[in-house]
Length: 126
Image (tube, rainbow, N blue to C red; front, side):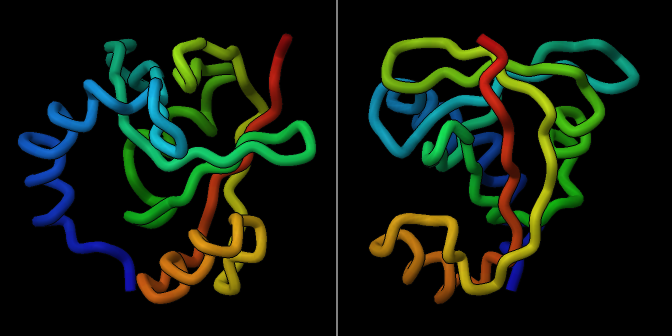
């Protein structure tokens, strides 16, 4: 089950501005800063971010077909704001894993219950 688009619209207008004050400072919340593929406009999207083995992984709770996912996979790089720092990352790829084995155990159970089947993985460009 991918979360419904109506919830995405609500989150964009209500939840994201509230979470924006915490995202980027309180793990696992983070912010993806990216540019629109066509407009070049800057966007900031709150996400659930996990770091392991030199890679950054983001749960795709709305699936892989969202604009922000298309933007970061089309771009050579984007910025992650996490733990009060900003990181340049790139080579973003989408992976399918219904078991959510890539996520920490506590989060894994939640992602499985929500039927989140995809995650985005990116590498540090430092």
